[in-house]
Length: 398
Image 1 (cartoon, one colour):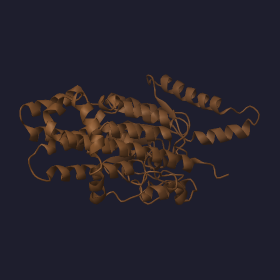
Image 2 (cartoon, rainbow, N blue to C red):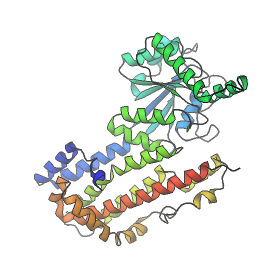
Image 3 (cartoon, rainbow, N blue to C red):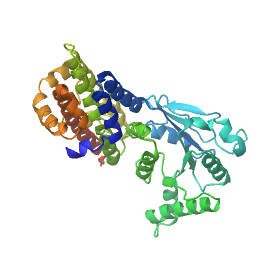
Image 4 (cartoon, rainbow, N blue to C red):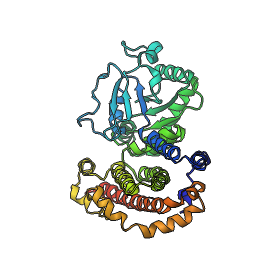
């Protein structure tokens, strides 16, 4: 349990503790609520750009966990289909927007006034796609973005096509790793020659996003995003690999102490029934959010089954937690609360000596412990179920 509390920053503890020491319970509760809302509602705007025909629209759909033919997906085609900056909200997280920008270098959008045309200031970072080598337009755009103090990353798309072509041409000597290294080195060399310092290049296939450098790319982006945007970025990623599922589990676990402390603070308010009502509300919302993040709601399961050619009943069959497949509502959580006190006592005993602010809220200790214990348990169970479901989906049908 020690590692679970390491994520509480000293700054966050001191702010809440100061409010409590001043006898201002309302301010302490407000600070926690504000922190949670900032994380949950942080806007994230991702710009996808590059020359026409590089697969921008397909990438927009892939990073949102959508197929090209799905309702609400970005329009794709063999010719430039995006004539103006087009926002596509994430199907599960409306505060996450992926922008499909017009192809740079087209007659409508010359490189020298491109950023002004697409209103560069609204984007958190840019992903510059190329399906071949990166050209002068890409380099000029990167320099302009850098001059405006924005982050940018290069994605070499369609590497699956390059590998297929290599295999056909070099039937005896084809080596996938060597081909990928050649592509990466060529991209980096061209960008450095063009004046880009230490360019970050990721090799991807938009049609098989779980392969090649996607894992490395998401780790880099998460590391370089501001703290409050890092969380929503990780949570919104498509559930296409086991490492992503683990990243989501870690990100969600970091917020449990705030939810538990908020529950604890409310428990000290002398209003009959308020604490229980608050605990139930916190738990219902958090547990449903966990299920959505891991893609274990019915709609997501059906979509995953269709993507990998599985029967949805096969995916459901590996889910072990009975809570995952039930409707998570107030009645269910109220029943669980009545059984959570035993585990709560263990949490309270440990937390009281490791979280300075909890000592000021002794009256709410059980409320803290119950909420913390229940959310940790449910998160652990649903994360394990998500791993089982994805592993089952990835199984060969042969």
